[in-house]
Length: 273
Image 1 (spheres, rainbow, N blue to C red):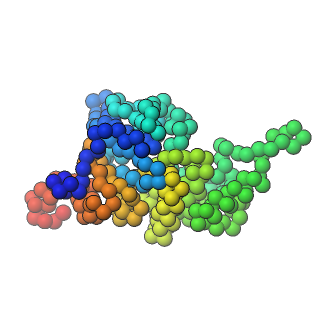
Image 2: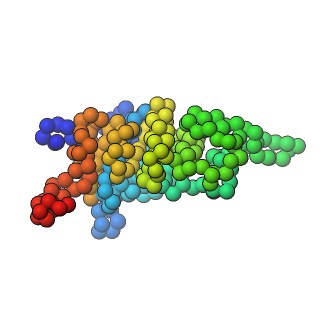
Image 3: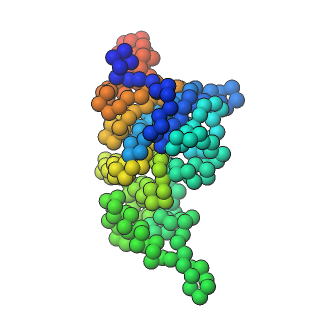
């Protein structure tokens, strides 16, 4: 793959067109090197998939991108300017939103209240600040409609939605509140086929709105369904980046599974891996 140019390492020069660029990022936890010079960027309207098996460094990397961890070394550029995130609030303020596997939602609370949790719209009645429920309900219904979800009503409990629909609520909420970069951490890992299809369709809608999507997954098929570029991590290092059409599903899977190491193990076990 590398020899024929299908899979390449990150460009040495900074990409000014990217919303965010992480360049030569290292992260050390004492003597443990979790990231060893990882480079990654995301452009407007692009879904850049970050792939790798368990322990590859995906979680550490996205926590560094979202301000949870500060890099030991390396540079971060946001909209072409050097950037340092002291904490997740800095990243959120810049426009980086993360949707985790375990969604921060209250199942018995309505979709509308979950949608605006922490950002409740208010109006004044006789000098008293009250929740503007009518506005919250109208926005929730419209934003969910844009994402292809037809609610029974804004007061429908989040717990009555499917897993894919709850993911869509979280994604729609992030986009509505100004996300420029949307980090999706294994959004399809616990979903069935139909729910997965709903989430992938939502990602496509978000991408068409100009939001840059970071899709973290270990599922090659799901990544290929929506990805524009694919970066593979292995033991904290970038194995390379490929555009859609430059690498086959088999090549991606092979890299994620360990590539040469797996082939050598399979040989030693008589082709039983």
